[in-house]
Image (tube, rainbow, N blue to C red):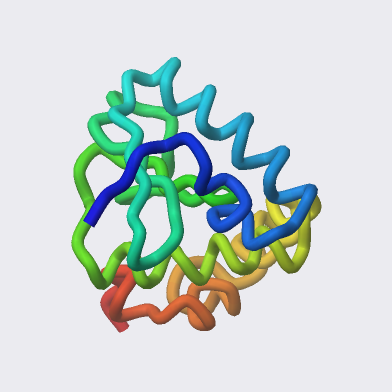
Length: 125
């Protein structure tokens, strides 16, 4: 299920230069918050689990890195993979675009959460 964290950066960032930069920063951030970082081969995303804080809700994807304490079920990773795709599509602006959308349409009405799959993300509708 997991591989080493060396070479998958391109896959995790979906080939996006901006997402690769954000992914590198997120990997460093995860280490600061005590994460055990691994790479999920099936979904092509880094999983930073065991964090003691530094993420929202049950977990947060930044670039190609999913930050969480322990919410690492397969459906959640499928959901977070879509967020990694969104980071690659919008680049570093995704954080602002997502925040603006969340302020206008929180939770289950957020178009980025809907695209990622509300049920997979653990949202109750």
